[in-house]
Length: 293
Image (cartoon, rainbow, N blue to C red; front, side, top):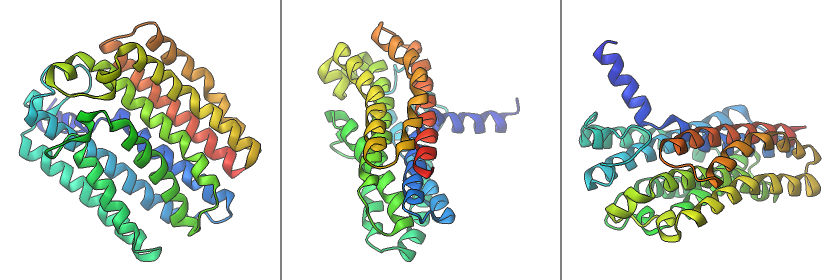
């Protein structure tokens, strides 16, 4: 493989594509809510997807940079770390993060111009959250708060924001539906941190998994995997009956849940991470379809 192509592959891997469903699903669900409200706007949904994807990629590069320069990525298992592995210079990875955040800001500015300028403040908060997860003098990811911020920004903010920029109002359904992508995004982070407990503890990174230990983290992962199906039933009962379609994805959750509960570690959890992403996509697609019908 030519060197340029190999470099491109490394940068794609460094963007951690297995985490991208966390950006796609809330936009899909938010658009389903907008369709349920009778006013889905395709081009606004596309721009919301650009914002979400660019924020996710920017956050991944920012984490790679910050963890790399701190030395906390040196003994990890899983996706390639560009800085820690020497495959990308800290400057280049930091630049990639800034460019990604810039793309998110540009797309968000267009939406703000046509909907409401207060969305600029929301976008700035999202970018700050992405950078400060492992960056800055007091990274909140090192203090066990990563799951809270992921739920807020990749669940509530992304879903409710997507619905709002299309409907230009809030009806209530978007807040309930947002719990589904929020919990699934948290599940991704929980299994990621479960895999890294030993390395994070040695590096002084006090994630929630490090704080509560592996057994409780495994239980938390399964709860985050089951919760979205419970919420789908609530959405069906009070808002859109076809939301029950999301339950068709339940069999996909059995395998990763069983693996985590039976003690999967190391590279086996990398596989679980990918399977969790597939559950996330399936639930997102089916719930969105149920909201539209």
